[in-house]
Structures are given as structure tokens and as C-alpha cells.
Length: 276
Ligand code: NAP
Figure 1: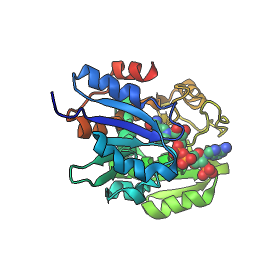
Figure 2: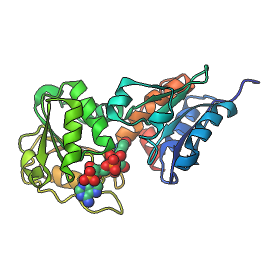
Figure 3: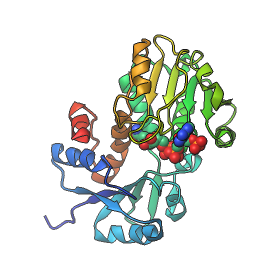
């Protein structure tokens, strides 16, 4: 009972909205593990000093969220190839030798959520249409390419950002102009919204959805609200829809396992804990 209690947490600014504490605390409790998980509002100016100090207080790692996901790569001592390619990290492991190890589990969370929510979806079944080219899109594209999707049709309001992403990820990514976004739906077997459009407090996603076909898998990274207009409209058209909350839950699994030593499962109780 004298060993330090392992601590983890999430660092961002602001941080009050984060659902990660509910998720990790739920797993600690249900798995009967010692430990705790705390939200921390830290400015970019203080980030490095805080990260170097936390291991001394018993922290085994932290999640990193907006606005620090990119800048943290310059602070970490070791960065996985995946995080380097994505250009952002969401998970840090504080190693016993004092080194900070950065990884990105968003792509893992995305694919696991898709597999759980649309078990009939096969990566090789056809092109994926990806709306948006921000940090989350980079993780999604990386995981789709890894899973074996033959072509990724990528569209973003700021075209140059999509072109940079395509350059980094290779010939499987085809950039389509944002005004053509509606036209790529009928070719795709999977449609992913990675923009922040449709989120509470943001504008609606106003892309024409007439091209959506019955049976197409449609998923939204936005999870507040849980049922976005995109998902509601897709369901009306007979599509298979997958909400974004599961991605948040699944991306937390590898981090929890690394920090606390047990692999948690994502089930309905985990979803309920996140929504509490
Ligand atoms: P980001 O890097 O800031 O990218 C935002 C994206 O949204 C860009 O593609 C941006 O286009 C687009 N966008 C914003 N306002 C727009 C508008 N008015 N019209 C058209 N496009 C617009 O953010 P991010 O980190 O990629 O996150 C994107 C969303 O994914 C957020 O809602 C976030 O909460 C969600 N997310 C969810 C999970 C999960 O676990 N479910 C994980 C990560 C992120 P421009 O390039 O033209 O600005």
C-alpha cells in the first residue's frame, strides 16, 4: 500500500468539456484498479514545464487535446511514426527513464468504432469520402489507408490543406473541391465527416446529401450532439450510421492499458459513463 497511486489525466485549454475523466474513472472503478484521472487546464507557455513535472508527482501519462496536440510533438523525447505522420499526438506515456513518449490513438479509435458500429463494412469494398482535412482528418486518413481502403476522396473548405494532406499520405488520396463535396457521396461506400460542422455552437454541415446510397456507411466525428443532422439525414436514406462517441471511447483503450496495466472494454456502460 506504500506504492504511489498511478495518476493520469487530460491536458488542454479549455478542458471543462472533456469526457475523458468519466471514461477513465469508470474503467478504474469497474476493473478495481488503484489510480485516478484528472482534467488539467494548461496554457501552451506552461505546457513543457508541467509535462516535465507531472511524473515526479506520480503521473504515468496524459492525454493531450486542443490546442496542444501538434506542439507537444516538439516537447516529447520519442514520437511514434504514426504520430509523426499524423502531425499530432493525443497520448503521452511518461517512461521510467524520464523520457516522454508521444503517440496518436485517434486513428485506432476511429477504425475500432467503425468496425464495432458497422461490422459489415469492409475496407476494400470501395472509396471513402472524407470531409475535412484538419488534425482529426489526418488520423482518419492514416487509419483508412492502413486498413486497405483503395481510394480516399478528400474534400476540405481550404483546398490547400487537403492538398498538403494528400501529399503526405500518397497517391491513394484524391483531392476534390469543397463545392463538389456532394458529388463524391454516390461513389463512396464510406462517408466520414471530420469537420467541426454540425457540432453544438458551430454551423451546420451544408453539403448536398442526395448522392448518399442505401447501405453506405456514414460516420461523424462530431459527438455533441450524438445524432448530428448528417447522421439523421443518412439514416433517412437507408445508410448505416455510426456516431462519433465510440471513437472517443476506443481511442482511450490503448492509453488506459499502457498507464494502468489492464485492457478495458468499450461497452454500453462505458458509453453511459461518458454521457453522464
Ligand atoms: P481542426 O484541425 O481545427 O479542423 C477543423 C476542420 O473543420 C477543418 O477541415 C476545417 O476546414 C473544417 N471547418 C471548420 N469550420 C468550417 C466551416 N465553416 N466550413 C467548412 N469547413 C469548416 O479540428 P480537428 O481536431 O480536426 O477536429 C475536427 C472535429 O472532429 C471536431 O468537431 C472534434 O471535436 C472532432 N473530433 C472527434 C474525435 C472523436 O473521438 N470523436 C476525435 C478528434 C476530433 P478548414 O481547413 O477550411 O478550416
